[in-house]
Image 1 (cartoon, helix red, strand yellow):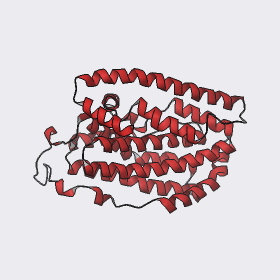
Image 2 (spheres, one colour; image 1 turned 180 degrees about the horizontal axis):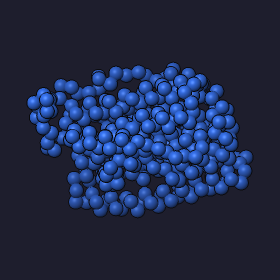
Image 3 (cartoon, helix red, strand yellow; image 1 turned 90 degrees about the horizontal axis):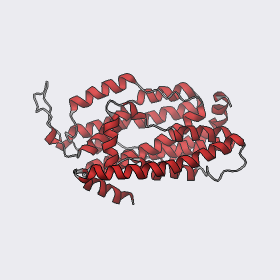
Image 4 (tube, helix red, strand yellow; image 1 turned 45 degrees about the vertical axis):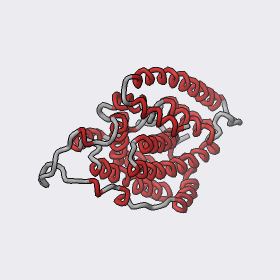
Length: 317
């Protein structure tokens, strides 16, 4: 199925889902979520005080998670280009992409204001990382429109959970309130894309299931290109903020259930093969998550991340 035909067939669904989104989305003002009273000038032209590591109220894993989440949001220009160049800028598709971009643009702005006001992260190192990461950009290289839609469906749910868990783990009421607000945006975006993908599965069952299996089985977060991502992601995972358990329980499992993927009928041979591949991937995730859990327990045994991991696990129960 050619991507042009897929986009054309799905455009009525985009218009319907956009109307629904506009009816339920709640606008919010980013400046109201920043603890400005905690802020003070930094060194530089304003002759403030330089950042010091002891000033951050956050644990190392939470700092790492914030860096990943913030730099991921910073790459919005690349994401907009990826989507707009695939769908076009006109009609219902264009209206949705621009609305989505306007809502997403708030996230990096308010997160950066928060971490600066709280002196939660080294501002110089953060800016150097931003320049490197955004300067590289993001490119999905996904082969079809259905692959692109499958990716954003999975990614929005994963991002929702990542922001939510950072807020739960940060130990700061202002931070938790802010992360919950951002996570609510990401959840609405996920519901839009999930609804759209449900229609794609109805219109193009085999092709859509193949694309979904390709994306789920090879999924990587859009921030995976951040310098030092591997080490940061390991600490985040060990603390229970986002790891294979979270991905399996709160992203892959709910998505496959909501789309009724494993119970789908009327599939051709290729669709049934994709269905089987997804089932085997879920089993693989369970095995890998169990192994990773043992590793994280050993990592946490002698570190301060242990209590944080325990608190996070309680909130996810």
